[in-house]
Length: 338
Image 1: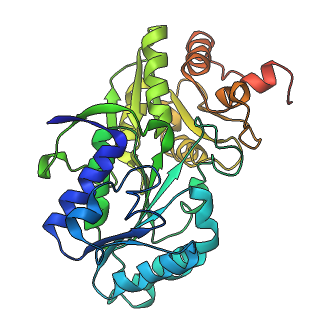
Image 2 (image 1 turned 120 degrees about the horizontal axis):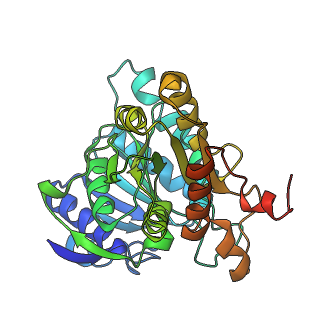
């Protein structure tokens, strides 16, 4: 076990899988000579050479298409998308081609492809480079979607993703790139896809979250002395229904905390499923703590309010546990929106 930054854990996962399997290749914009725009492939070119670590032109449609073809041909490509927004020009390659090949071939063709994309606010990149956009890929059957929240699961989820025989989208919050934590490397450090983690036990309510809001939710629980159970979903598609439903059975309450805007956020699916399957166990209405339905602001003071932070999460959870009534978000309380 060693202490690594989040971005270093990604490098470690790539390094370990590339050393174990010669079919693993890495490519994307500036991933080779520069070591990655966020230094998440640093040192890989020197160790594995230019045939396995390749810089690409600024053409996401082109290199994602090449990755799909390479995967079908027997390689295990890991393609990096610098900002999640850039995936928009290559969605056809993912949702129409990669996600459908196993189905269209009656199981004869698999696409062991990993697409890594950085997401989220908190770094001052503005409206066009700070979204999470899970809903672009989470509604496409055939794709696995995961989001890392710690150095350990950044390492473990990436290694699982590379070993998967189906296409996996791994989302990496840039807000966490510099966060340091203990990382177990090797087989013991691998985090299975499709399995959530209970990162804080509690009895008063179940709080489901993932990515950068995991840290904020844990801070809120500690600061407000809340007896909540915090679940890091880790994999959004397929999400771990058993862990979430079992927790709600015990706590009788559900809150989802997500960085996505309120409309169309991934938490709606969690709330809908729990309401349908565990309605009798609920002691009060589930609700979501989200970002507002606005572009991510550039100004630091405004951006700081966009993503749910520990103080807002703690305030809403405290009010909910005291009253049993879902509270209004800050933009409604302060009169910015009805």
